[in-house]
Each structure stands twice: as structure tokens, then as C-alpha cells.
Image 1 (cartoon, one colour):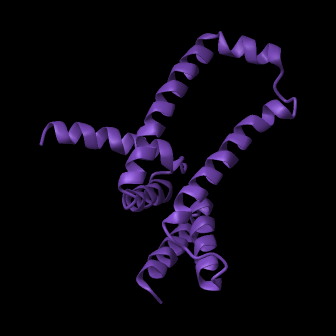
Image 2 (cartoon, rainbow, N blue to C red):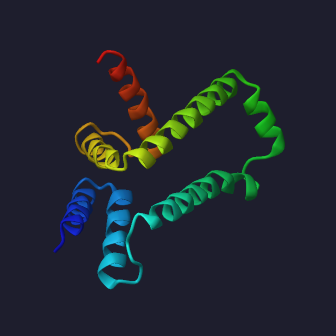
Image 3 (tube, helix red, strand yellow):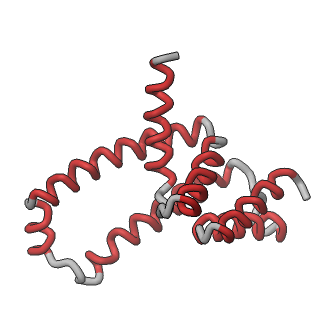
Length: 151
């Protein structure tokens, strides 16, 4: 087994053991695609899967609107409440952090290993919940920038 496949298998097993089904599913899918040779796994596919993941994430966010679970009246009342305004500001901040995360992951994709490992540790030992890698990478990028100021 080649080294990249061993790393993916390691994350697959860690994902299963830590009950982080997203990590287990993603690493298992990449392993399956690679072993079956259906897709030639290369860095060219990284942007394709990255964009596809973002599309599915946005679909998940928009589904309650499309299904009618949330009416225009509720949206209006929620956005202009104190909680809604705070959530809007946090949404803006997380979008900016996610942009920093995208840039960090494109420049240093190896950072993803630490993010996944940290997510597994956080969910396994600290009762955490897996978060999106873009915002996690954005937070990492912010901390890296701060650390470089003191270097």
C-alpha cells in the first residue's frame, strides 16, 4: 500500500473510531476511488471536489428556505432581532475567515491533516462537534498570522 493510501486509511479508521462520519466517509470514498482506479486521484481533482463540497454545503443551507419551512415573515423578523443582527455579523466574520481558510488550504494543503486530526481529537475527547474545514482553516490562518507577528 502506497504511503498516501496508508494515510487515508489511518484517517478512515480514526474517523470510524471517533464517530466522525464525515472524515470516515470522505477518506473511504477517496480510498475507494483510488483503489478502483475510477478516478485518477491528483491535485487537479482537489478544486473540483472542493467546489462540489461548497455547492452541497450551500444546498444544505438553502433547503429549509426552498421547502417552505421558513417563511419570508420569519426571515424578516429573525434578521432584524438582536440575535439575528449578531448572527449576521458572525456570518460575515466566518465568511471572511473561510476565505482565509481557502487561501491557506490552496497554498498549504498539508494543513488539512492537522485540522482533521484536531477535529478528531476534539470530537473524541472533548465532546466537540466536527466543524467545517474552511472556517477551521480560516481560524488557523488567523492564528498563524498572529504567531508570525511575534516571530
